[in-house]
Length: 200
Image 1 (cartoon, one colour):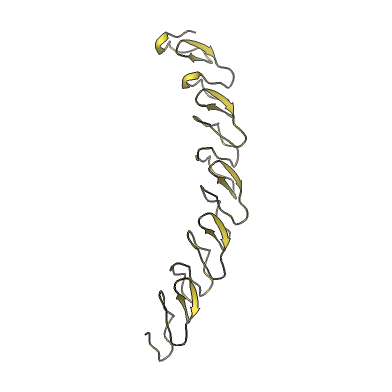
Image 2 (tube, rainbow, N blue to C red; image 1 turned 30 degrees about the vertical axis):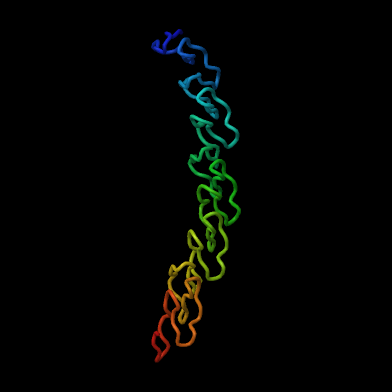
C-alpha cells in the first residue's frame, strides 16, 4: 500500500487508494479524488472534481467547476463554461451559457443558442429575441418571418416572392403603390408597365 518517493509507481494502489504527493497511498473518502489530479476511479453520481482535487456536489443545474463533468446534466440544464449538455428542453435556452431558463413565448436566447424556433410570424430582433413582424415586414438582421404578406418585401433589399400586382419596393423596405405610369425607384419593378406605358 506504499509508493516510492519521486513518483515511481508501485504496480497500483489498493482499491480505493491513491498516491498522495507521490509518497504513499491514502484512502479516498467517498466521493473524493486525490490531490495532484490523478483520478481515483470516478466521482460518485452527481459529484465533480473541483480544481482536480476533490469531488463536490454540483449545485442544482450546474456542472463541473474546472476539470470534469458530472455524470449527466439535469434535464434541461447546461454546463458552466459554455459547454452544452445534450440540449435544453423544448422552449428552454442557455442563459449566459450557464443554465436553462424558460423562453418567454416568442423569445430567443440571450447570448448562446436559439430556443427552438420563433413562433410563426415572429423574427429575431438583433439576433436576440423574437418580435412580431409589422404587417408586411420581415427580418431586420437575422432571419425572416415565416413569409411575407402578399405583396410585401423584406427590409434590406431581399425579395419575398414578389410585389403584388402594381406594387414596388420603395428603397427596399416595403412595397408601395406605383404612381400612375411609374415603376420601381431603386430595387424592383412593378409587374409590368401600364397599358401603353414604358419604363423611364
